[in-house]
Length: 98
Image 1 (cartoon, one colour):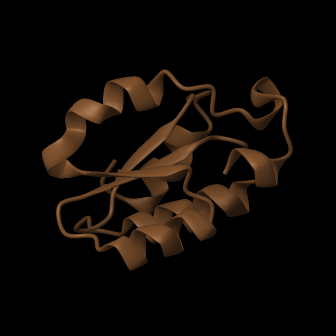
Image 2 (image 1 turned 135 degrees about the vertical axis):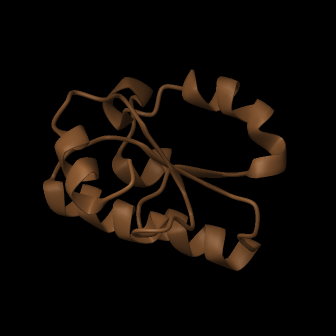
């Protein structure tokens, strides 16, 4: 989704996971993560980038992203998307599953 408005509308559509590029023309991945948190929805957020450094990736995960992937390793997305991201399904607290 190219705009914040379209993204917010999409969040209301019952999606299972958000996969966001770190840098987008209209708004960035960290802003998308912020909007997700503000929405109060419990949807896993995965950030994707070709340029993100380890420190930035860790910072994004501390902000609530459940994972990050480098664009040259998108093959890992399949196994990641099949993981039980829901903290209740994992049987642990939010701290334990992050």
